[in-house]
Length: 382
Ligand SMILES: Cc1cc2nc3c(=O)[nH]c(=O)nc-3n(C[C@H](O)[C@H](O)[C@H](O)COP(=O)(O)OP(=O)(O)OC[C@H]3O[C@@H](n4cnc5c(N)ncnc54)[C@H](O)[C@@H]3O)c2cc1C
Image 1: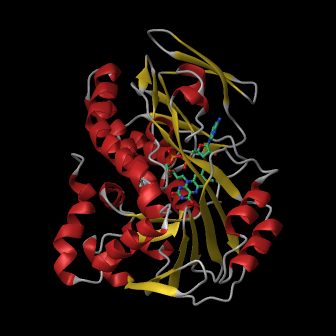
Image 2 (image 1 turned 90 degrees about the horizontal axis):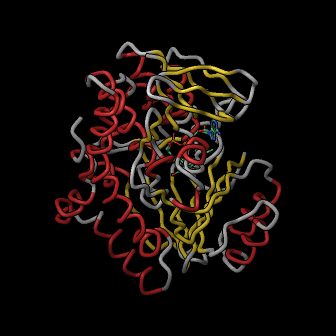
């Protein structure tokens, strides 16, 4: 079975690996000229960890893991509010947790799969009948596939072509995220710093090669544009202390800012005929929901497994959606609240509550309670 996968991200590359494992022929296309390495450090845990284990990836993940000793939470002027030893957090996840750059995971997955990626290529048009899907690609070629998978992220092209415009399925959460990497910053190399002020948050994470990953996260009712982003950052963060003036200056010089509105994707159905969506394309939980990469790997694993074991693709698509959707929906609900109450608490009262929650991590008696919040890994039948 020949399967076209649009998107060489976490979902697309994991799917390519597992489809080949089940004897199918995946063909991966990617719109960008190369694997994309922009973005921030992601927390990787939960059910995706199990999928990575089944791909024998844990050693490689250990190698790209950026270890820190402490998570330090600062207030808007840079005063220390809370310190959490990293071990306390990792223990809550039974030591099954990594922090690494999204791009490093994508590189790893690309090396793991034998399917070459066709870069600078996207789907221009597709037509399907009962037997196959005819696809016209932007490189001018026309090809026929048994199935097409849209693994092309939150702004999916396949979704637009087959299911309709993005606005129909996107739920903006009212926040913007801006991420970039700087060569140097005067901070400790073993600490993940988080600065919180009402409706705003900054993260500063040291990477393995000495560079520093930075994100700005802030309340914004309009979607950001590259033209206005620096003005928006100045308005939202310009009054804050600590290293914030330096960070704003560095952001202004940066040519490769990752900028996106925090959005969830909610769809009544993830497949239509011979076309199916995967990962952020059909169920983006957003960074506030956390675990986008982990869930993308779970989805890819389940979709491939169902296609490899069911007699017909309709049953496989239905079963894939049925196994994933309830857990994803719960995560999206958590994400909607987390943005306002935890990620960037909107007022000082919520910031105090956030502080209380964080302090629980340093209190051993609270561990069983907190563990329940992290018990996502058992949610999917893998
Ligand atoms: C550059 C980038 C940076 C990110 N940074 C963060 C971050 O800092 N924190 C966080 O929590 N999440 C981040 N994310 C989102 C996170 O990667 C996803 O939530 C998660 O990995 C799910 O992955 P996915 O494969 O479904 O989608 P994505 O990781 O978005 O991958 C989709 C892939 O499809 C490609 N693509 C898009 N359009 C087309 C097209 N028309 N044709 C072919 N290919 C196409 C994209 O270039 C990308 O390679 C980022 C995503 C991207 C693309």
